[in-house]
Image (cartoon, rainbow, N blue to C red; front, side, top):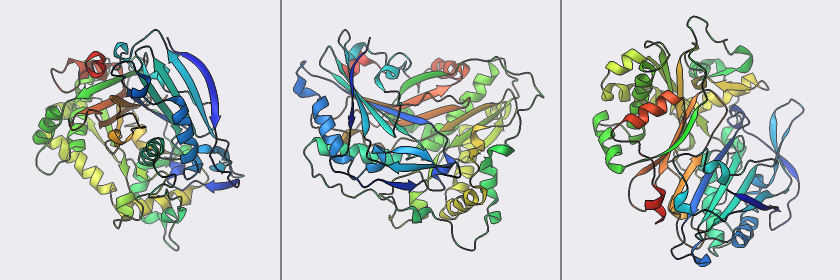
Length: 450
């Protein structure tokens, strides 16, 4: 049982001139949804010096909110009804909590509804919130949640590393400083958005979202399951080898997951021939600026290509063939020109909100939908607030959409090459994952925390 002791608002250490910061066209593609992440710090002998303290975290947070001032602001509406940032310096809500009757090793990490849900704060206002939870064993968990409209995981990773550096006594000036230069994502003059047909295939204005098909009986309505799994480096390598030469680990993993969805369809109330949509979130920084100029850009620079195949076809394909299909539609979208075309496509449809077609799937009532978003760039070892690297970390993203969402990230265990995978998916997909003899395993808190 977690007891919430007090909530403070941590403001930037230096005053800020209030101003408004427009969201970019790529920010405007995101719905109003929050993303969570949490870090577990074990205490070797119950000594408070082994884990971060709330006081040190708050002091460092105030310092790092000076360069990362958008996180201390609020999302408000423009006259046209679009979201934008009010950089007011209101601060970040910071909750201190205790789990006095529990030890970290007793936490069921694989069941985030029972664990992470109580360790990651529910944001009530502002752009970001933090929760610091202390356990009976002396261990602690730092949970954060942020508004996805303001930034993507890449951007938030930059903030986490800067926050940890400040807690370790590092310089108050962040290097490199985050960039909020929206000109990187400004539409080009005189370029017609009609030339980019891919953007039309990947996104759609909300007024044009097709109604669900009634051609097939709907599958039984069920709540999505949330799980956290451990995937060994050996299993990742085996998947990549089976996917064929030239395929990335993420492409191989996505192909395997796509086939698991097809297996799940075969054991559910859905038609065995139902179609399965699989999407992948692609970062565009290095595609738009190969010279690295966007390396410190803070915001969203994402697109979501996807593919649709019949469950029966997927079950009959070799993993290498499925991975080749994934590689094809990811590569098509992952170019600077495609990202520039998407920027201009959004400009042509403003101020109407849009939605990624990857979340809509095949438009059939019993189709299955999933999107994979890589968190592999999260430098877990650098989220060291002065007392050592975390023993465990994971995303937590129990979003309300009907589509599945899967987010792999590096294991906190130094040099292991293992993954931690957050899964929000239909119950039949979770069952298919857990019936596998390898790949998806529940993390063992007793082994992780001792």
